[in-house]
Length: 295
Image (cartoon, rainbow, N blue to C red; front, top):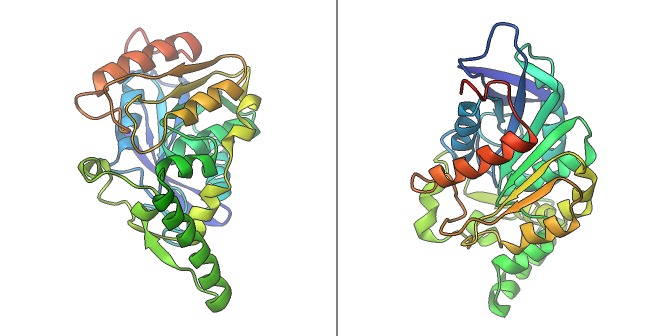
């Protein structure tokens, strides 16, 4: 069952969809995951919608949301600021904890790519979050960008864009907009995984916000709450070393999974069965649901 919902975050009305397993008994409160989308993405027709449906099928409530400025939520289009998204996540926790279907003591947060970085940061600073799952996420914006623009020529082009954006803002008071693929390169053959509702231009300030964002600094504070760092070995979009470094900094009850033979999008049709098996085993151990027997 799916319920379209909205909630407020810093005066903006944000859009979400609550998934409730059909096997839930009347009055039963279930462990719940808030699902966070990737870079200027959306909760709909996206990789995180696939993630939400997978987790619901395992016997959890799931609340997938559009960050401010994305999808069906209010806010300036494309103007992504990492700490705004952390605030949106915390406000989603506050909102969803009041739903009758949700166990407020067992709310986890998960996300893919950029959403995974936000999930880790939110988990590190908000003790209400009971578990975190990161899929192909990152912990250090500058180091991530260096991995995404690996040659001297590519790095010079990227940092030149940042400097030009700063200069343009200082001289005109307006943002300079660039292609999302100049910020986060994605090979042509993988772009079909992006939602048709995703945005394809961003202001340079968005890239600067990401450059300065460091989930590495707070990942240790998630412990002893469980943390899954799932990162595909063949990820050519977000460097795998990001999750390895996060794991090195994490505390108790953190687990690192590096499955091979998958892209940055581990819920594609051919990869979903393997991903599901790994995630199900982790959840059974660290964050079980009472519906596991019937799901």
